[in-house]
Image 1: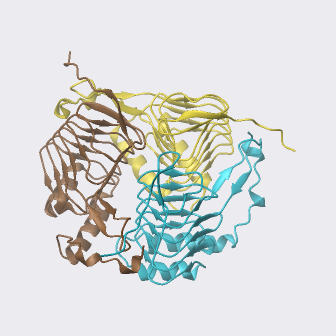
Image 2: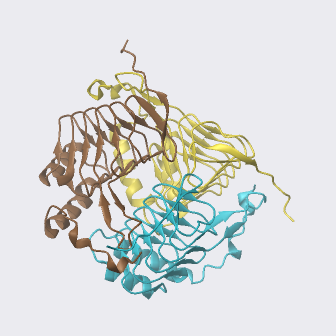
Image 3: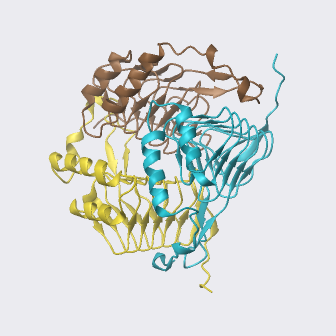
Length: 182
Length: 182
Length: 182
């Protein structure tokens, strides 16, 4: 492993550096504020290229690496201090809940190579997924429809639809059954 | 799961929104400061309704959701960046140590219901409990007297008195025996 | 356990309190900035006593307890929001990668004593170690050359050279084989 041989140039950031710097400033001012509202945060993210549906709530302290690689469906909640570290695309379906402090990581490195090459892989959350507080999702993971990742758990593989997953690494622990509202 | 059907109105926040906004500002200014002292932080928390005993140390960066739902006994330490996410009451006994980055989560959701109802449950730490750095305690957990939760572990069930717990989810791994000071 | 009997006086901080306060201010201004560059961060850390090699990258939001107890070799990467909580020395070799949100904890307490004595132990990362994002390393751990600690895992014991470790607590899960660059 020779980090001096690492080549960052081959990674495509998608936007010029000056725009990325403007995004970092906008994030510090508008997303980090403990008070201002969700509509402003959504508008700022959209201004920088995020595709965000209707009825989405974005709480204070959310961080996004590249808004231009983010898609959020309708009626989602992005909780306080959620970190969307989207070197690659993150696609979030409808009615998803990302609770406070969740971390989505799309980047890894090829540890078998001396040059420690960057590897990025998208994350997909299908509809009705819940990532509980301080949970972590790794690169390339798809969370099937209705999947749940428990408090503080780490998903390194795909999550089964309509199952609750727990642990480091997370494994399915029980089915998630939905009752009709009564 | 239909987040557009979610009803936040039924949750009782305990104080009017304007007071909550003032608390958020006070927290940003006085609790987040990297320098100012523990006495000021205790006083500000008490001003907003927290019940705090004698000889309590509160380090920089501590976050509290609702100070009016927080009770801390005598001679406790609340470490740097501890997050007391107390939608429901958090009661901390005497001589407890919450190390840096610990997270106490009182809120969850009923994943079996389409309306994803909010469920909040109090957390109780009895006397002489130690939550080690970056550990997590879930809703409804009672940590028995003298319980220890290890570095980065996640408590989803009650912690046994005078035992050390580790893992995600945490399980008891050994008894905690106290020798007399010599 | 009687936290009122705890004696902080016996712990040697290595520098006077006024210098530590200046470091906290410098950290808030120069290291926390989301924009400014790595050279400035390295220079500020060196000014306060850190020994840092050539070609080291330090990302925004890095926290260091005592720069005078930090040694970093050549060509290392210290990622966003890495927390080097070095009450005791942290020694990082050459070509090490500490990914975003990693936490290195050198302090613990003697839970078997009523006085809850502080125990600090150094952390050593030998050359070519990778701590993945949001991983945690505990007091006294030595990570052998080329060791990898996976996403969100917690190292409480020494890490084997050229092995990947995962879990809470982390255990070796596979060898790390390096191919020649081709």
